[in-house]
Length: 487
Image 1 (cartoon, rainbow, N blue to C red):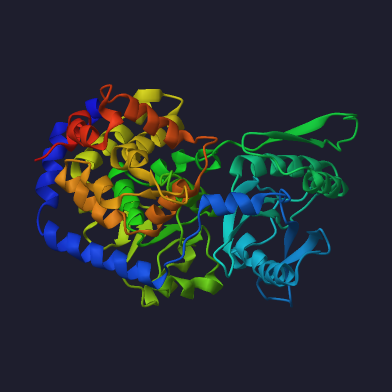
Image 2: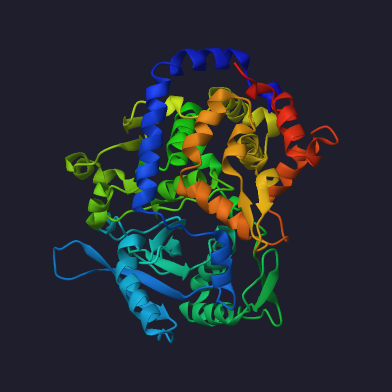
């Protein structure tokens, strides 16, 4: 990372970002603190993991088809099949599930009015997110395909709704659904029943379900839940095809300050993949706010919300978007690699040398790892966060109740770079940072994700003895983070 930071880029960035930096920094700090007062609650992964215990792999599975209410009208999406038929849980769950079932067709076919019967269609996979009243999320994993048959016909969407964010696992299930749908629709429900009745997999564990294909005998399907699903099955290629590295770094910076971002694309799959990949770039942090990879046109007024969001819109919704009173938003045109609206300070948010290093590696990603681009991309962003907060564990001190508490000011001042300390001053006020620290304050020793592994590797590069005391650590940190030295 240090070897590829690009000195010339540093100089160019410093020239373009120094003006009004003090005023901009103060404005950002005030803005982030005021937002935290409005929405002080945040979820943690620890709470989510507790909720997931004894949970089914998915909550329900539906098939959505297009129909006309009357001759000459546009097509309307409707749920034509549902499994299980009865949602046998608490009243609150049933009421919330029923509300979601009403909304799902619009997410499966946000482009319903553009469809007409066709002869051929290559199946496509996309996803959406439903947010509950308590801030909880349910993921919709969709496979749009053309039913087998002759003549012109309309596509259907097979949709799995789950509390678990595991894109690769559900993509594999949808592969099996599509395979059975091609043979006979009657084969789909037995498979989904088998998946629902399977034990909920622990992190990194594999479960098996019966195949249910004719002639398969005792064959089973293996479904594995990854150790850390936030970096799993992320399609970075679509993101880099749509955006330049410089534009991507500005989007990334905006999300770190929990701003409002809207993606515009002409395909559902592009919106879904780019939103998912962008959120994955935030790892090990979690986007705590509104997240709608594909927003149905009928719900477009949501973009007027004053709270942070990441929302995807189809290009057909752009004329309507321009009419709405949307303020302080970054509108990203994925079709033409440009910003339609911006705050104008996006290039001065990140510490300039870290930004230069990150951009340089992303531009060299193909040369660095030919066919392993995803690994280079995720490792580059993980390293970015290691440089910023990788020393957090040294400042988690136990309290009288055996809980750990972050020594915030000592943590921030541990880095000698003035620009990094200024960035941390703002970033530490975000809900993302709050959730990250709260989770680690509560977390017991156990399975470590990629970030913890990389952070520990980084700390181990410090000279022996420097970890034995905070003062010695503070003294040596600057020399190890070479491009974070004082100006």
